[in-house]
Length: 414
Image 1 (cartoon, helix red, strand yellow):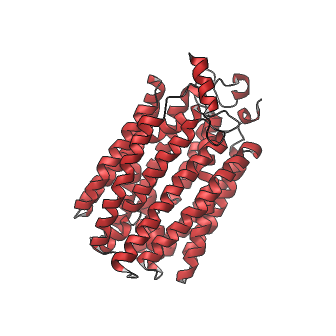
Image 2: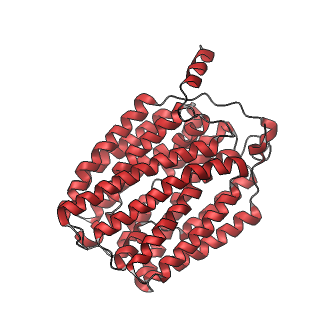
Image 3: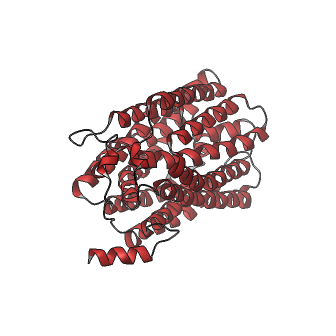
């Protein structure tokens, strides 16, 4: 029966990959469509409509990104323990889909924080099991391509969501610089629908994958005696934490665009450009990483990030932001999928869920102080200071990867 099932799966490959990859990508596409419509312009909702300060914006960005850390770590570990990834991922997507419509009723930054926390809790529950399920559905020589395709589809959802957002802004308030409440309400109404559809896709079309047989001899660099995590993986997590301390919530990138005189619709269109570049870059970057290695792409991507943040610091005209958003998309496309594939290279199969939990946990924990520091620097020093700080830490992290982390040997096994 298992062999027959494997043969059916082989005949039904989509884009040359296990069908789980496509349907997980479709789930991400629909969920990101929803999230981009409801949450991307949240900093403008907070500042333009609720009158919140940038310190509050940083607090909400940090809490929403960090408070789910425990769920990310525990859900990954639990998926390893029970041997099931799918239903934890389904539960996470369902929780986010339920939380989002309540943004229609939000009337204070405290309520916004609670709703955003629930949404991010859902993300914390689903991300590690989902990525472990994705890795389980891929051979080691196609991980970069698989994670890249998933990121491409995810980001395509962002493009569609932001395009719909721009259309709603144009139809309701034209070229106004300040976001209006009625505009935001329509974003919530329209954005709720794809979030529900995405949950249904993963529930009915994604199936638990049989874990691939790995060449243990080729995995010796990533597994300690006794089945723990390697020193290389731990060093990678530490460096990732350093990078994330300067990788503030993208709320500040959006505020910087408005700070330099761009209207709401232009900000939305800039985000469309960012996500288009991100989508087009993700799959090629993943394929290149399968052939040439992942570490080099991560280093180059972080150096691009440092230059982009330096650009945000010194930008002086509205049109500068268009160029920077495009370059920002290149960074995301090069790094996001590749860094997650790199995690699978560094850890044993039976600990992938736990590893992705720690990966996302480090990102989440570091985001709270990063966003608080960014908000404080924005108000106490200048908007530029926020981005100078991020550029400096990205450069330090890139040097750390270069000198302290080796390419996983598992990738080179046959």
